[in-house]
Amino acid sequence: MQEVWLITSENKSKAETAVKQDDLVSRASIMIKAPSSLDIKEDGYFLIIKGSEEAIKKAGELLKDLGKKYENKEKVLAVVKEQENKATEGFGKILGF
Image 1 (cartoon, helix red, strand yellow):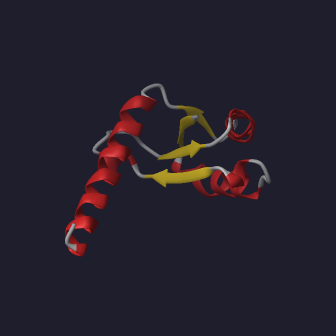
Image 2 (cartoon, one colour):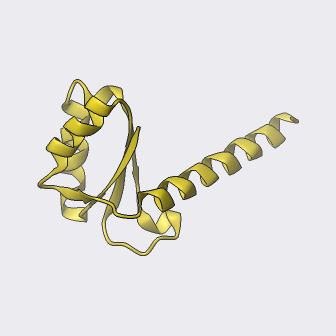
């Protein structure tokens, strides 16, 4: 399960600390991306969490005052996946695959 939150710049470090210090959420995959790195026009940062349903729910509780769930999460996740695929492809070319 994956979820995307849009966090204000002012709350970025608080949000990052909150999710990384929680025992359940910290075991999930946590990624922070600037919208501009994804060619998306938004202010702040995307906090992307991939984990269990319980971890996502707990993250929502931790982040409720620091940001909001991003309405167009599918777009964010698609661009991130595309970037990861390009990076993997490039790495394969370096190794001669």
